[in-house]
Length: 205
Image 1 (tube, rainbow, N blue to C red):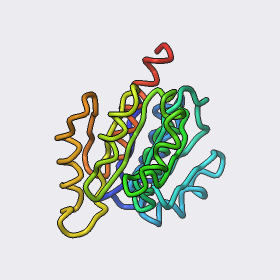
Image 2: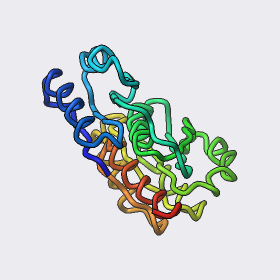
Image 3: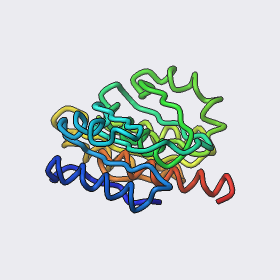
Image 4: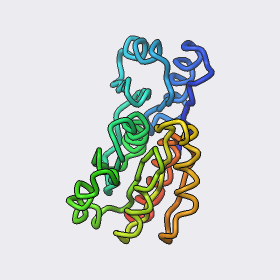
C-alpha cells in the first residue's frame, strides 16, 4: 500500500510537488492525492504533461500515472446522491490501488426496493463499501442481507440533529448485524484501503 497525499491544509504547490515526489519514489504505483482544492485539480494535468492524470472535482482526488489492472469486485453503495463525494474518493482509491469496482448510488432505506434490486450483484462482491449520512442505517441493512464483508462510511450529510455525521457513525458502531466494519466520518479513502486489502487476500496476495 503506497503512501497517499492528504492535500487539505497544504498549499497547492506543496501538493503538486509531493505528487511528483511520490511518482519518483514508488513508480510501480500511480500517485494519489485526496481532498484536493480546485487549484490542484486544475493544475495537475499541466504539471504532469507526460503522464496520464485523473482529476475528479466531485471526489476531490488526483491520480497521476497509469492505473494498474483492476482485479476483484468492490461494490460502492451510497444512500443518496449527496454521499457521492465520499463515494468518488473511495473509487479513486480503488482505481489507484488496482481494485475493480462498481458504483451503485441512491439505494438508501428511503427507497429500500432499490437496494433489494441489486442483491444478486452484491452477493458476488469481494467487499461492499456502504456510504450513508442522516441516521446511517444503510450499512447495517446491507450487512444483514449478504455474506461479503461490509465497510460502513458515515457521512456528514444530514439535518441538524445528525450532528455532522456523528449520529450516522453512532448508528453504524451500534449496529446489531455482525461483521460490519466502520471507518471515520467522510473517510472514503480509509474504506477503500480496507477493501483493497480484502481483495488482495481473496485473489491471492
